[in-house]
Image (cartoon, rainbow, N blue to C red; front, side, top):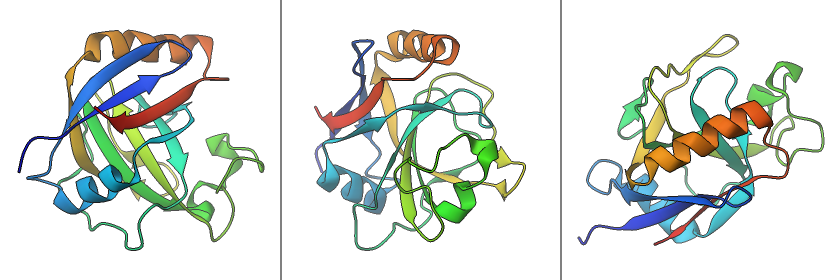
Length: 167
């Protein structure tokens, strides 16, 4: 199979990086994401995992991918896939409002995340270990994206969009 690449963008900040899909390590997850592209939504900066930005989406595949190529310690440039139900993220501690799409009891949502710096640990105080599926790795532009992510952390995410599209 030929290598496949996507672009990950923060629209308001005008920053894009390129990631390679890890088809050899997470083929089912890569296939599901690739078929759903383009995807974009409000960006959030992680509270617990540290150096992570992500967007939440309604499920885009009939069958959730299995936990292939899992990690609880993502490294800079990792793209991770998580699946949550609204009950798991419904606590006010997570900062979602009742108007945020999918954050309600019984609703399933997909979290597509980009990790931009070191020292991440996917340990949640309420839920315990939260392994993610590593399905992509940034191969170009991580330095610019990391700077934009740090700005997002300090200046705020309001009005910013995280997008994924085929390169």
